[in-house]
Image (spheres, rainbow, N blue to C red):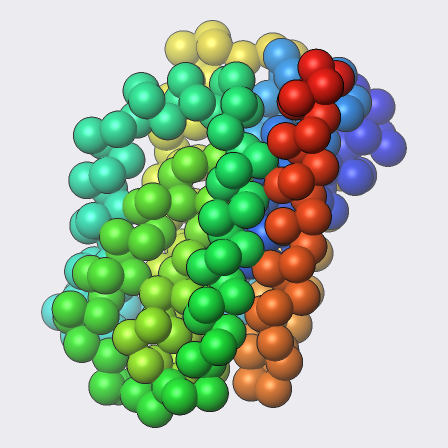
Length: 260
């Protein structure tokens, strides 16, 4: 891996982790494009660490508050949203890992992400519940959507934001809770991947490439979170839906022709 490849993949991870277009799906495509299919684990771990640091740098006050007050309403809401994700991840871990390795379903998953984004955008302006009005039932349902996003090209941010909008949560609060809920999810992924690294299930990646990739992931992840929070206030999710539809269709055609 050279520095340019690390730069591109870091930018891709940083942007797509928080834009509703699937970071895992885009990283799979990026590695495939650069011929780095066998160098994924160590790189993915560091790139996810970058996005984790990005979102933590934005929500550090909330994180400190939840640590100091673990039984506060916000802490319990995040816990309620995280539990379904953990359960789904543990129950279907092997199935999802096998699917991710082949990438055979990512075209269809991009298309499904687009459908969910399009439908949620149609009701985006109907949301009336603010953060303090989010119920534990809302949190569990959003967590179920997040768990489904373990599939490689189902967008975690897209599905959790959509789930919040379906629950009539105001767009700003939907983005806020989605990104806050991403912290234990991304942290869990980093921990699991790190365990595999220590077991030797990884290929060597140059330190310079890791630093560049992680730094870009952090920077562009930070910018993506800030931009998405503003976008959801007045913008539309339909453009993201159109993008992933085009990408999904392109992948399906390429797979049909045997060139992907």
